[in-house]
Amino acid sequence: MRALGAVMAVLLAACGPKSHSTPSQEAGPPSWHVVLQDLEPTLLCAWGTSATDVFAVGGPLGNGGATEVLHYDGTSWTDLHAGGTDTFWWANGTSDGDVWFVGTSGRIDHWDGTQLTSFTSGTTATLYGVWAASPDDVWAVGGTPDEGTSAPNDVLLHFDGTSWSPSPLPQTLGRAFFKVWGTGSDNLYVVGEYGTIWHRKGTTWALEANSPPLATGNLTTVNGCSAAQVYAVGGEDVLVSDGASWTRANVSLENGVNGVSCGAAGDVVIVGFAGVKQRLVGGQWVTDFAQDPHEDLHGAWADADGGFWAVGGDFTSDPTPGAARAGTVAYYGSADVSSTLQP
Image 1 (tube, rainbow, N blue to C red):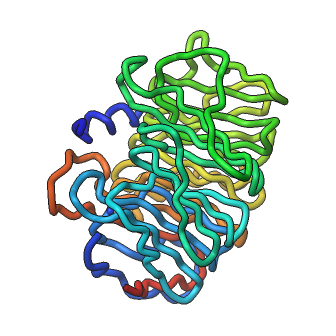
Image 2: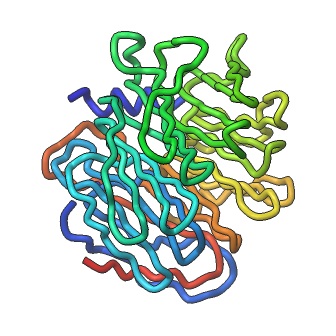
Image 3: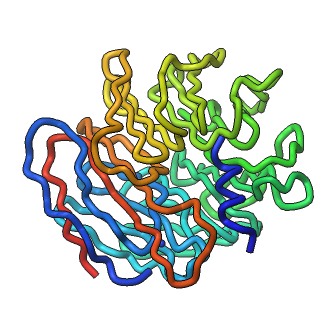
C-alpha cells in the first residue's frame, strides 16, 4: 500500500466502538458544535437530503478498521455497518432512498433507504467523488495521485440506471480526479491534480483555468450555489466561476482548505486543516477558526435550513494497524443536533 502521507500530500494543493461523543447542544445563537469526536475511523464526507437525514462516511485508511457509514435521523446517529475495510471518500444522491458512496479500491455502494448494495466499478483506483443528477444519471471520479499514466488515472465513470461504465474525456492527462459536481449532466465540473478543471457544457468537455493553471496546487472539491456561482478549492486555492471564467476568491486563509459547500441564499462554507472553517455571508468572508473543532477537516455540506456540517479527523498519517483516526462531526447553526450514536 502506498504511504498514506504521500497520497494526502498530493491531495492537498474509519471500525470499533463508537464512543467519546459530546453532549447534545441546546438550541441558541448559531455557532459551531462538535457533535461526534474521537471515533476510530476518519470521516471524509457529510451529505444529506435535510437536517434530519444526514450521512457521514469514511473509514480506516489502512489501519485495519471497518468501512464507515453513519446516518443521522434527527434523533440519533446509527452505524449502517457497510462491511469491508475500504474507506468511503464521498457520498451524494437524489433522495433518502437513492444515495451513492464511493471509495478505495474502486468501491461503489448504493443505499436504497433500507440496505446497501455493491456495484461493480471496473476500476481498482480510489474513487474520491460522486455526484447524482438523477437516479439514472450519476457520475464518479478518481485516480491514483502522483502516479501519472503508470497507474489508473483520469477516472470518470457514469451510471445509466443499470451499470457503471467509463466516460471518455478528450485528453488523457495522467491525473487523479477528486470531485465532480454540476447543475446537470449538461453543466458538469470535474477537479483534480495540478489545478485540473474539466467543464462539460452540453456534451462537450473542455479544460478551464488551465493555461497556465489558475490554481497553485491540487483542487480537492468543487461545489456550487448555482450555474453562475461555482467554487473549486484545494490547498491555498479558493477559486470561483461565474459559469464563463474563473477567478481567485478574495479570502484570506489560516491554513490549507479541502472542502466547500453552498447553502441557502448563496452562503458558502469552506473547511480545512487545523479546524479551518470560513463562511461567506452576505458577500463577506467570516472566519470561525477559533471555534471548535480544531481537528483537520475534509468535507463540508450545507443543509436547506441554513446549517453547515463538517467532518474530518486524522486522514493524513501513514497507516498504523489498530490506530484510531479520531473521526469528527461538527455542525454550525442553532438547531439541537444529537450526539447519541447507536451501535
